[in-house]
Amino acid sequence: MSLSAALAQLQKWQKKVLDYVSRTLSNIEPEYSSSKMLRSRALTTALNKLSTGGIRSAMLFNPEGVLLAFSSLTDESERSKAAIAANIWNIYQHHLETSEADTVQEIMFEFAEGRLILCRVALLLLCLHGSKDVPLGMLRAKAMTLIENLEKPLLDLADS
Image 1 (cartoon, rainbow, N blue to C red):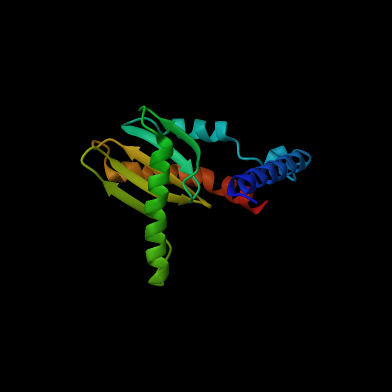
Image 2: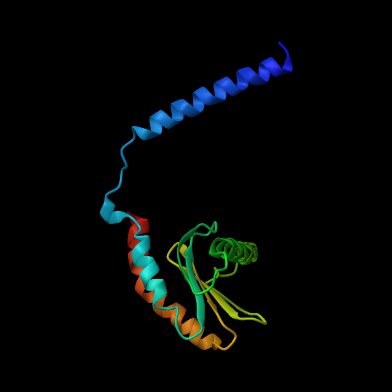
């Protein structure tokens, strides 16, 4: 059998497998109720309330950097920010695990153009990006307020 014939056969099998998986997945009923789903609109509304007083963006994402909800006053790519922030969080977390220290609860950064705080909320991460005029204490206070309001509902969702 020639290489081109083998590749053609492989592509046919691949298509058959993908079609089968597609049909199978479309027949599966979800095993969760709609009351246990994460409501991104409600999360976005909560994050919008923080976008005052110099806060440029607020993001909620999982540890892999997948953006779940965000509020932004700029046109920047929030998905990229979330992926970078999650990567930084995971590097710090990994470093602490190898040194047998506590887990990371928050990370604060001060840049030339702004300030950033990254905090754990249940199993997710919250990132607030503020202008350089926002004091770190104010940025942290806003993050802690949101965490207090989101922690229990997100933990309840994770337990279900």
